[in-house]
Every structure is written in C-alpha cells, then in structure tokens.
Length: 379
Image (tube, rainbow, N blue to C red; front, side, top):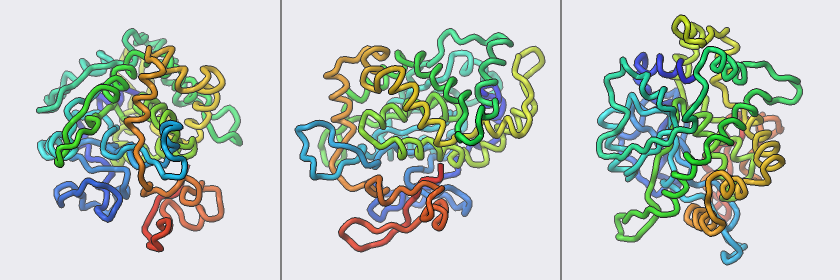
C-alpha cells in the first residue's frame, strides 16, 4: 500500500476532507477563516483540523476517559488533553499556509515520521522535502528491515485485501495480522514519541507550561499511525468503542485523496516491483478503516496476547511504570468532552438511535440544556 501512496502523492493537492473545530466551546483554539475550508463535502469537525495540503489531520484531544490515577477525584469528568497529539497522513503536499497553521497556530515543534526509509527515499519525483520548515522531523520508522522482495510485498498486500473469513463477524483477520505486525515491530519508534510526551514542555500564551504538541504520521495516517493512536488512547482510559470510532473516521479524513490512492492501487506497481494490481474491491478494502478491526486488535492482540497496553510499553517500548504513569498524567486533564461522556452520546450505527441520526446526531450538553451537533459512532 505504501507504494501506491508514494505514486499518488504528486497527483493530488493532498487537501484533507476536513474542517477546523468550531469555536463554540469545542476547543480552546480559535481558528481564523484561513483555517476553514469552503468545501461543503468535507468532514465535520472536531476532531479534524484543516492543515492545507495535509490529508487526514486531526486532534486526539477531547475524548472522555478515566482519571489518570487514584489521586484524582473520581467524581470529575476527564478528557484527553486537547491540541497536544496530532495525527495525519504524509506531509509531502503541505503548503506555506499549512506550514503556518502547523508551526505557529498549533505550536508543533517536532514531527515523528513512522514511514520506512525506503518509502521516504522513493519520493524521487517529489520536489517537496520530507521536512517542514521550522519543524524538526524525527525519523522513527516502524519497519527498519522490512522485506521488500516481491514475495514479501505480496504477503503484506494479502493481509489488507483478503476477504473476511466470516462476513458475519464484521472484521478482517488479515487487518488484525497486519496490525499485530506493526505492534511487535514498532516498540522503538513508539518509545521515541512517548518519551517526547514525557519530557517536553512549551510555554503557552499565558506563560504557563504544558506538554509540547507533536505530530506523528505515516503514509496515509491509517495503520502505523492508527495503531499508535489506539494505544495512547487506551493508556488514557478512553473506551474501546470510542477508540475504534476514532480509527474508523480515517477513510473520511483522506477525502478525495483516498480515491486517488484507490486508482493507483488498481494500476499496481512498476514491473518487477511485486506490487500487484488490485481490483476495486481489494483497493477499497485496503484503504478502509472498519472500527471492528481495531476492536478485535485491542482485545485479541493487546489484551489476550500481550497482557495490556502498559505491559506492551514496558516490554517493547522499554518504559518504566513511572514513565507510563507520567505519560498518562500529562495527557489527561479535567474537563467535559465535546463528544459527550462516552455513553449517551456515542451511538453505534446499528442501534435505533444511530440509524435515525445517521453519521451526525444532536446531543444535549450535560447540565446546560444547550443542544449542539455531535458525532455518533458509524463504525
């Protein structure tokens, strides 16, 4: 899939199907008109933020979660810290306006690139550099010695394109295998990002110190990026159903670029590359992000096989229990979620309420009586 993404990087402007968060209480960050998009077909936000030229850019903040430790009052509401962890697709199409949004408005000083060295080096026909002006690019490849032989690529593509073993289960075992492969190889890469969260601070406009915002990305911002996002949200105590919903909106985040990726996948790679031409069904499956795939990965791999996210971070990310607690404490803050409390607001698509409301629903703010548009899970 990475090969198709490289081919498609120059054939689109990379504009995400996203808009900025509305300023009506959903975020402390107030966007100017230059950060909004005029397209009526773009994905509502939050969590998407419009960074010009960067597909699938969104904030991991604002999701309801547990208190970070027993020292915090249990009767308060807690959320993941807004405007601190950002995820996206590759930045090869970023514009000067996008660079300004990223570095000046969102205060990102470092970005973590999860792509392999080969992926980055293969951008020979892309005139834009892999780095972004004013932001340090830290190369943390998930796969350092990945098998790029024709046989190895064929095995990788098979995981993403195989049909479900049992359609009634609603998930792909191939995707779960692919995510397990990422999971067991990504420890050193994910460690660098977790250490950033643990160690780096920035002064906000009021002079107060807060964790320094960061961006992490791979090619599409779906798989390697999605696994890390899921693990961090899990560590913060975000419910699995919400983690899976956050993963599942990737397809919408890719917007029109996703269609370009599918078209290139259907053409296949260069002769002798080992990248097969896909059918449309296979390509759409490979680009997809079904919530159930993430649910099964968390249950079967993270929990049953590994014993939980904290054990994974200790064993493969080489973090101490104290490190992990520090990361969690820095990423969880007191506050009400713009998405609700994770129970009454988040409705699976197969529920009556979810079907009636579709991809967006109206939900009341607790205690205020005000109604505003909220997402419901669409899976």
